[in-house]
Amino acid sequence: MLYYLFAYLDQFDFPGAGMFQYISFRSAITVITSLIISMIFGKRIINYLRKQQIGEEIRDLGLEGQMSKKGTPTMGGVIILGSIIIPTLLFADVLNIYVFLMLITTAWLGFIGFLDDYIKTFKKNKKGLAGKFKVVGQVGLGLIVGLTLYISDDVVVRENVVAPKNLTVVDVIQGEDMTGEQQEALAQDVKSTKTTIPFFKNNEFDYEYLVSFMGKHSQKAAWVVFVIVVILIVTAVSNGANLTDGLDGLATGTSAIIGTTLGILAYVGGNVIYADYLNIMYIPHSGELVVFMSAFIGATIGFLWYNSYPAQVFMGDTGSLSLGGIIAVFAIIIRKELLIPILCGIFLVENLSVVMQVGYFKYTKKKFGEGRRIFKMSPLHHHYQMKGYPEPKIVMRFMIVGIILAVISIVTLKIR
Image (cartoon, rainbow, N blue to C red; front, side, top):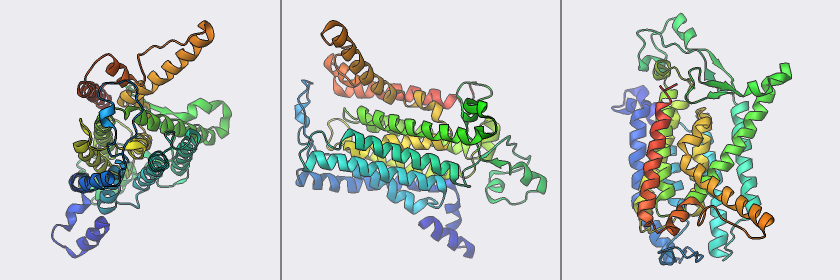
């Protein structure tokens, strides 16, 4: 809201109002505001949750130090949600289709996660919200995101972008001092189902290639494929984040690293100068997403203040489902969804460890009459706990791996 206020005041040369036109300035303010909300108001929320005896019910799995966590306040994801939504509403252009979609994603999955935590905590039902309802919610969000990206005229990519010589970033943003030829060079906006393939020189892949056999109907069919891919990615990544949320600070810290990387990718992909220099896909108006991701980063770091070992609060599904969904939708919007297996490698491995464990157990039970296991326990972080690794060491090493994967994701901009 302040974005629009200062945009109005800038017409009257109000001192400092022009600063709000710069994404970098608003992103910095957003991070600070998000940190303040999560750290200051977060403490009050934790005290309230503790006062209301909204504590985590721990199922004894025989893990070291596990039972000491019993009664730790849960549903702390509301701290993360508030720390993302409030600064975004204050400092971002909420009429921007991409920012609007991210707010919908945050609220949608936050609500599903809240229902799950509410049932577990207040209804004393350890199973929480039935899995089929979670999946329906995730699929529903995938449909909303995919169809919006298809229908909205504001969702375009700019192909063959060449930044005109002697054109500054300010000129590009404001559209000033450009000749007709320059404006034409910057106006090749098209609806497209193209995305980015990491490590390839000609690093663009069009979903239309998959349905090229359909001839003149291939373009519409490509959007059907795209929507299906969106649904699968949203479901997989949100569940991956949910599974990763098993140790103090693990999901929070990993998400902060991933969010920072996505913010960098959104910034260069939303700036015509950098997109031209790096020879990557330029997505008009997507630079505004950097403000949203700044709120995300501030929220996760601020929450980590209380969620690090030993945790004073757990995020619950309210937070974990939202974090995964935000990461998935953000990557899809900036056309970097094929980077997810690398960037979100921790989530992927946690997901795979559960699938492999369950699949192998069922297979061996059917074949040998006795179920066998690949890991001592899944998800993977519990395997290392069973091997005797201290919880803080596991979390720190997972985060180090997360940083390495983030660096690899960034260098894909140049290594092809």
